Structures are given as C-alpha cells and as structure tokens.
Image (cartoon, rainbow, N blue to C red; front, side, top):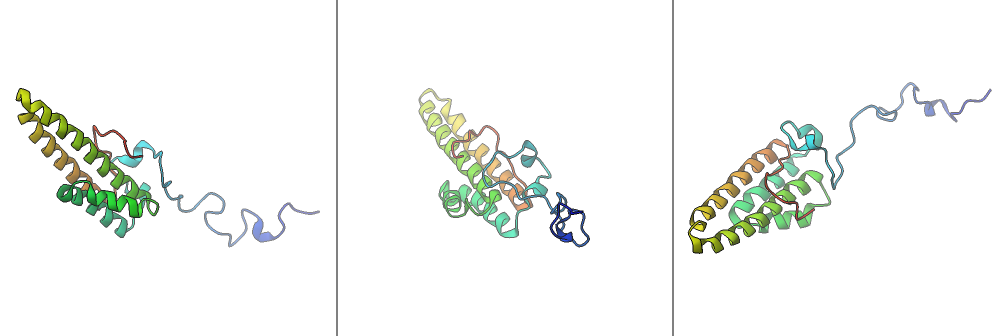
Length: 156
C-alpha cells in the first residue's frame, strides 16, 4: 500500500519537520503595501509590524525631520526605503500626507487672513501639525504605527 507522501519527511506531522510548515510558527510579515487591518494602527501594534531598530530609527527621523525641514526628509526616506520595510513606508507616507495637508491648510489660512480669522487659524494649524508629528515620532520609536487624524491619503 502506498502513501500520498513520497518520503516520511513530507508528512505534515513528521518528527523533525520545520516549524511553521503546517501553519504554525511565526506569523508572516505584514504586506509592503496595504491594506493593513485597523488594529495595525492602534496602541500595541508593534507586534504586527515587528520593526527592526533601524526601521524605528528611520521612521523617527522622518517625523523629526518633517518638523525641521518640512516634507524634504520624509520624502527622501520614502523614496529610498519604501520598498524595504512596510513600517518605514507607512510612517513616511503618513508624514508626507500630513505635510501636504499642512501646506494646504496653511495656504487657506493665509487667504483667510484677509478676513482676520486666518491670524487665529494659521498658528493653530502649525501647532496641531507639530503635535501630530511628535506623537507619530514617539509611536515610531516604540515600533508602533500611528494613523494621523484628519489626514487624507494622498500618497498611497
């Protein structure tokens, strides 16, 4: 009588078989491009992303660089590392989308200065952008993802 397995090692319950071969073991890495589940953007999401220390550092620098040099630093990191790590890709993408939204909000606030509301709105836009970048930088350092509120996904 023959078995459907050519060798004993091919059997899914063979002694000494590779862990993970039968569906157990470490989970697969997150996809490079989304969609990612909503739980990947909540507190405690570091287990989903499993980012290396280098990934965390580059994501942190992209957010801090956005505070100092606007969109230039996250743009450079995004262009150089977007295909290497889903963690870096998502953080730099979030940072770039925030910078684009801040540029649009700053332009609208400047136009509204003619009716005086822009003098209140522009500092509010700037401070809000700083707060979101700092929160995202802290999350990046922890290896977690942060979906910045009110930001439209312009860069996908």
